[in-house]
Image 1: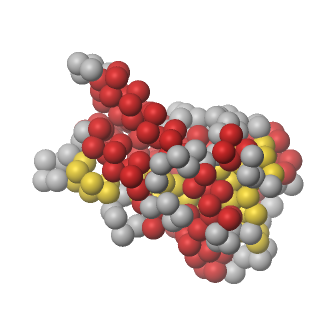
Image 2: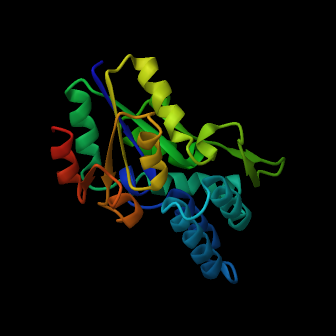
Length: 223
């Protein structure tokens, strides 16, 4: 396998931030829910722009979210309808050319599974965070041993995927500073910033290549 393409998920393969989306759904009918959802979205933006340590961002968002397993299941199904337009065709075209295609996310597998399955990702193609639940099904924490739960975690995950597949080149694609870090740390050999869902200036200014749409991304990836 000569080349692997490693996609971020939230605001890249998906047109939303999955945790924010799930929380907004769960809080929609609760008093003060809209304000809590907005607070969580602001924390997400800080983390993706590099203005807040990613683990701190996760801790703060989990504390605000108050999600339960009953909230997560319907949200995960709804997320499968929010794939970024053009990404289904792009990921399938890349596989058709013989490239390995992987999803590496700071989001949570319990939310992302159905959407990634729709995009053709098998379980072994996915690396993501995992929720920790209490006996009543409430999300109380996340797996803190997972490298994706901390800043800089995508670098070693990208390097491990490259080693596992025997690829000559690993290309990271994503909208956030955590995606750029995978390249800056040497875990990925190349990086393409993606602004087709949201343009983050901290990423656009650093990225050696930048795509403002899926069509531009496809061209950069040679599809």
